[in-house]
Amino acid sequence: TFWVEHPMRYFLTLVKRKFLKTHGAETTKGIAKEGYTIIIDSFRTNVCLFFSPQEIAITTLYMLADFHGMKIHKEQQYELEWFEELSEELTIEDILKLRDMMLSQTACEIGRGIKKSIAAAALSLKMKEETKERRRDETTSNVSSVNYSNNGGIDRNDSSGSNFEMVATNQ
Image 1 (cartoon, one colour):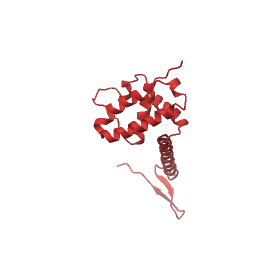
Image 2 (cartoon, rainbow, N blue to C red):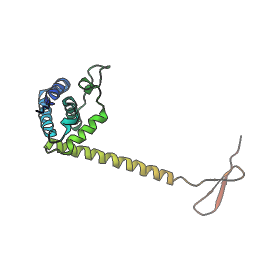
Image 3 (tube, one colour):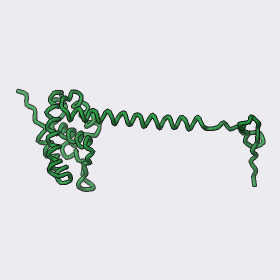
Image 4 (cartoon, rainbow, N blue to C red):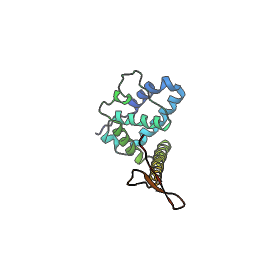
């Protein structure tokens, strides 16, 4: 017999602890329903064989909080990261890897919405980086050519083609 512990128990505990006080009962109930859908949908993949139920619960809450633009705050200044309560060795990189695995074969509507949101954010980031790079390239190509003359001045060509000279004087 093969037994898999269900992540829903851990997910509901996290949702109650992290959302009920700050976001209210209705929002918390909606997050819980969406989380249930994602967790059930995750059983279409093999993540339950490679990750603990705690890690699946943490990743589900992370996805939903990110998707809905909600912050998960620490209750005290020196508290561990919110997800370290259930899994001390889990890192943000692990959460992102698990998120991608869970969403790879998603069939639920909320999962598809999260996938689209992640793709849109990645595209936006790529476009911002390309714009930044293009502006940097334009800035470097617009730098005028400057030649220093033997007498310490700077020779430049003006638009009429005639040379003029600026001589630096020490005072």
